[in-house]
Amino acid sequence: MSAYALAHLRQIDRHPELLEYMERIQPTLDPFLGRFLVHGGDSDVREGAYPGTLVIIEFPSLADARSWYDSSAYQQILPLRTRHIKGDVILVEGVEPSHDSAKMAAELRAANWMTALYPRQPPVSPTRKRADAFCLDTLHVDPGGTFVVAEHHCNCWSYL
Image (cartoon, rainbow, N blue to C red):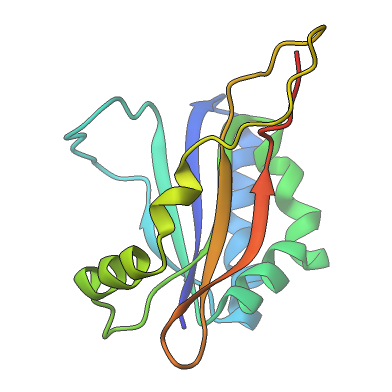
């Protein structure tokens, strides 16, 4: 399944090292079959605010994307970008060509997924205040196509 490296580049200090980074990045992508899908360019913000620019690189798999990012070749040139651009980079798995969002919604509904979005109440100490937070269960699809809660991420027990 394809995966993507997404970079939201918010603040750019136009420095000569950025040109060197751009000249050197493709050879770091080639061993992992990475290719640019979006590299800056015009954008049309339809909802909210989106300061900056977007870069999207496609890989054959999330493992390939991770291996590229962690590779010594990429790590060697990474400071050329990070010293001059403030932004966020994520690696994300794509969906199969047959992905059906309505089917996914039905499976999530059947798994009672919405309960994962509501706060779970911790025992509150009379001397502490509970921070507003929520729990999020990570749902994974098993080979049979059903959603299974495989991880529980929680900061709802955070206290001020």
